[in-house]
Length: 250
Ligand SMILES: Nc1ncnc2c1ncn2[C@@H]1O[C@H](COP(=O)(O)OP(=O)(O)OP(=O)(O)O)[C@@H](O)[C@H]1O
Image 1 (tube, rainbow, N blue to C red):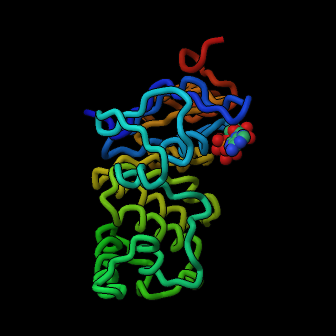
Image 2 (image 1 turned 120 degrees about the vertical axis):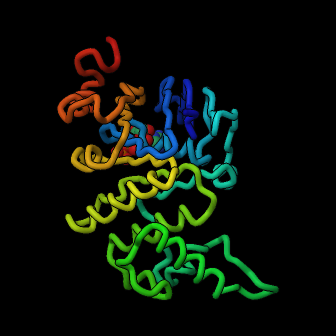
């Protein structure tokens, strides 16, 4: 199976500080790949390279097997890459439909085509089996944390997305809302998308991922199938960069 995303030998520095060292990373269609690592390990930096926010210093970037080089978020979006950042970037004063189409509004003549946008937003939410959100004309200010996360994720798949990266989608959520968001994450993959999930929560990672990639001090310690690794081994990769036969050699 050709990975949707295949990064090889990625280096990234900020000034004299090298944050990513020779990182390989793959994400397959229909799978959730968890990206784990301690604070400062380089997860966000890697994701920003994927999303075209940062240009790479060195390395190869293949998308659907084709070499590419996204140099802006717009380039990444055009390929089918969507990043849902932790702050979600939703506008409180706008409703769900307006948020989902923000910056990419549908127009008819000179005016906004609300009925088409409303139909498409409703269709995407229903395709994702989201039933917990109510009317799509509700303002985002009135939504709970989990509902906001749902809107941000639905916005990401409204376009012809192939790869969706979710940065800690359940970080601030309660138990029931976390469960709903994880189910949504799983459904995205079941629809054929490649999903990358950044998480510090091992229970969430084991509940939903097919593969786990562990970054340690800017190096990829291991990327393995979730069924081939234990909870304890992942924690060792995160904290020490190695675990038994897995991980970085001294
Ligand atoms: N624009 C920047 N300029 C300089 N250093 C940066 C920049 N962005 C990130 N870094 C540094 O790169 C390292 C990795 O940061 P990054 O945010 O990628 O880690 P992370 O794994 O996402 O951490 P966390 O789990 O805390 O979000 C940190 O030491 C950080 O200070």
